[in-house]
Image (cartoon, rainbow, N blue to C red; front, side):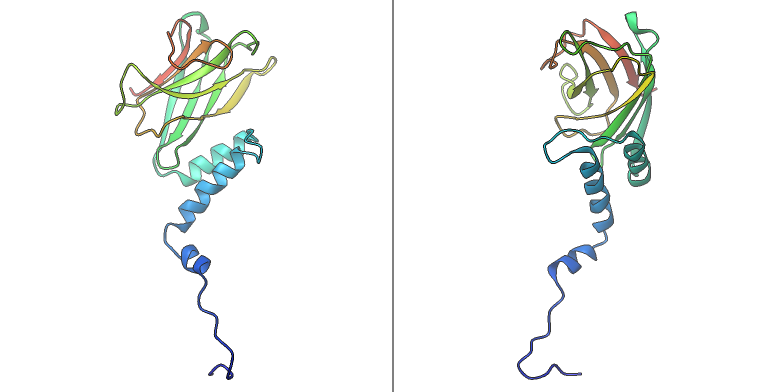
Length: 176
């Protein structure tokens, strides 16, 4: 039926057109992952099981690699999950000793074959709390990654470093 004189029919809203787009579901999933990991103050409010479930269900390009301990950290083990399309990932780690953040912190380095091999991407600084047999850590890559070939955990000075001397390599996860 025609609209009564003087009334204007509402047009389809811009949001409805956006939400009908075929990629809207993927965008919503990426937003949900980001929202689950970052609080309004920029702190991590991280739920390991939620993060892993979101990655596994929303990333069609999920990479999974196993960590092996090196040097003085032979007991270190775990897995890394990474998605290029979401630019998100997590590490599930065991056997890494607790650290005193005022003396040293762990730092993740990501080797991206499209970047300089001598300058891996900083994946974030993290701590292992005392008394935790296993921990799940979100990856905080400082640059966009494309098909990482290796993930390396080092022990560095508090706050991490810009370029690691790799004096204390804790664990390595790589292709093959």
